[in-house]
Amino acid sequence: MSPSRLGRALAALALAAALASPPGRAEAEPVPITISATRIDRFGPATPIGARYGELVFLGGLQLRSDDPNFGGLSGLRLSADGARFTAISDRGFWFRGAVEREGPTPTGLTRVEREAIEGPSGALPGRRGSDTESLEIEGRSAWVASERINQVLRFALDANGRAGAGRAISMPKEARSAPFNEGFEAIALTEGGALMMIGEKFLDARGDNRSFVVGARKPFSFSVKRTDDFSPTDAARLPGGGFVLLERRYVPPLSLSIRLRRLTEADIRPGAVVDGPVLMEANLIQTIDNFEGVSAHRSPSGATVITLVSDDNFSRLQRTLLMEFQLPD
Image (tube, rainbow, N blue to C red):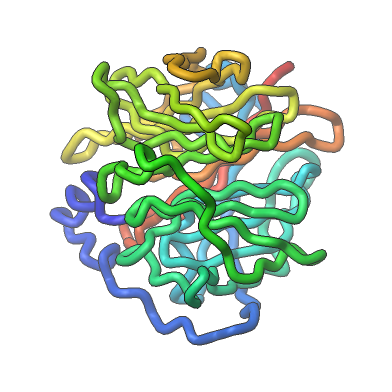
């Protein structure tokens, strides 16, 4: 996450490193990096692997570290349909791609990881102090990346290895381009029909709900996502069985952080609607959480729906890059 309310409050507790200027990024080709992973076998004091938490079952997690100075700030995530590979973006304007290793349903590490600069129409994107890439969607040979500082969505063509060329800006309604600075579209996901759903982080309508849009459809339209308990959307993903999972975060200074997952029904998303959905789980600092900003969903080899979360560490020594997985019972 870029220096928002959460970043500024944590900066008051000596998180100056989170606001450091990004290191140089001259590499034109993918750079192999090594990710070390420490297993997390409990989501909370009473939630070991295999235990239910809310409507979900905890499958395990990882704390990720790397000597690469550009690793971190992960704000968007997509896993392949079988969960074997991942693509993530950082708010410094990098792609990260690699394989997810597992023992049964439990993640154990990331291997064959590469980093590559995200290229826009005019070259490498300027990172979180410029465009601030925050959300990601992938479908087939196409990827979409949303930047919240300049309220832009780029579409990329992918090659057979998942590598992207230069992105091109998609058309967005004028109303969508007026999202507040640094509080734009942190959550994007494709609808079943192939249009792009975009949900604002704190882009509020007259009722105080989160303004949202569907673009790329025959008739683009706006709707809203019900805002409750001051949770802000940070990502969304389409579920394999239909509908969406919405990741939300609430920060209350100085040290209160909560995250929430809600399920949205696609049939409810229509022009002018206010969409709400049931809470799948809500967690706070009693559980093993951090600044979760990315969510993905896939089918496991057994056919179960798996939800994967990743956190943005703000490049701070006081925060962590966590990857956590849960099963959504059918």
